[in-house]
Each structure stands twice: as C-alpha cells, then as structure tokens.
Length: 166
Image 1 (cartoon, rainbow, N blue to C red):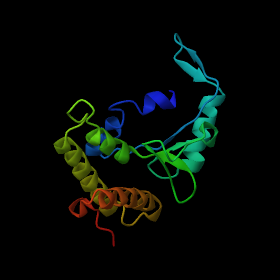
Image 2 (image 1 turned 90 degrees about the vertical axis):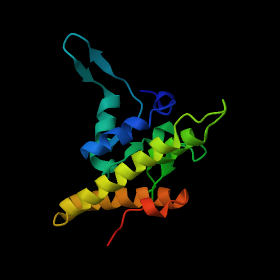
Image 3 (image 1 turned 135 degrees about the vertical axis):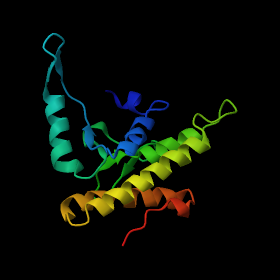
C-alpha cells in the first residue's frame, strides 16, 4: 500500500472501527519488493520482511510506524513523531482534519461521529487498563495508547474524553 492511499479520505476510520471490539492495531509501513502468488495466496519479499521486523521490534505499542526510508515529514497531516523518534500514523489528528475539512461546505466527517469514536476509544482503553492491571507488559501498551489519546483530547480541548490514569 502506498503512503498516499493510506491517508486518503476516510482511511483513518477503520482504525477507530475495531475499538468497539477491543482490537487495536500495531504495524509498520515501508517500501520494498513484494511477490504475491494469487493461486497459492502466498506473499513474500523484502518489503514484507522489513514491515514484519519494524512491527515486531520497533512498533511495540498499538501504533503503525512509518519506516524512515519513506522520509516522513511533520507537515503531513496524519503522521507524528513519537518520543522514541519513530514516526507513526496519527489517526486521531487525521480524523479531526477530515472533520475540519469543509472545502465543499460540509465536513468529510460529522462531529457527532468523531466524538462517538473518540468516546468509544476512551472506554475501550479504560477497560483494557483495568483488565491488564496485573500484567505490566501489556498494560504499558495501553498506557502509551491512553497518553496518545489524552494528548489529542487536550489538543482539541475535550477534557471530558481524557482517559484517567493513576
């Protein structure tokens, strides 16, 4: 998948959509050669290997990181740099930009739907933080997600949607 198609129109909504089922994504976007056999449904190549390595060794938290070879830029909406200097898909800012994009007189996404998705994510994070209270390894991943969520909610001045952290 090219980076251009990832950030097209409503592409951030699938990331929110699975929150209600307590599914959060971790992965990587890179470039490289890929071989796909349609009959065997077999995929292989340097791009797949690199994406797997980045996902398993670097992504760590529920985030989709962007390989440095793609030369991420802070001027692109939907990409952000984390405290560990890795770039990742900032799907919440991307969703918000769709809400604010009203070139045709109406936003691409409704404010009600955006707030509903953010509220669902908040609740799912809180449930997971409770569920994994005794497993610090897994809980740390949800703490990262809560901090990401909270930074965004504070940015849009929605303190009632902030996840409570101990």
